[in-house]
Length: 101
Image 1 (tube, rainbow, N blue to C red):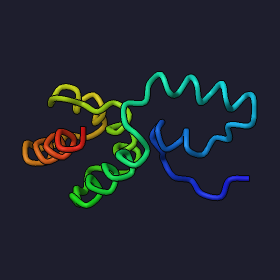
Image 2: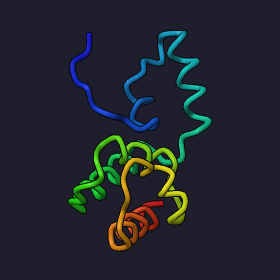
Image 3: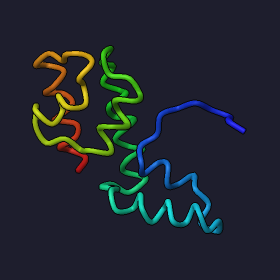
Image 4: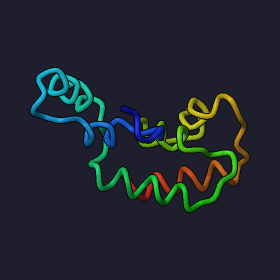
């Protein structure tokens, strides 16, 4: 049963999967190949990006930022294909990501 519809990063998703279920264990193993942050750091980064109060940045964008950890404007632009960020917004996001690597 779905209790909450909230976008999660791969790191956050792996925390919800049960490791005693064989099929979910395979999924966790697959996801771990792509995880770049520990759960605590991912949650902390989500909070810091949310605290920037950028109107154009929603929870699905934050999840993709955590998954991909973009290093420059071009990488960040690949996440925000549906909207355009101005220079100030881009710099705030990149600075926050850089501090939380």
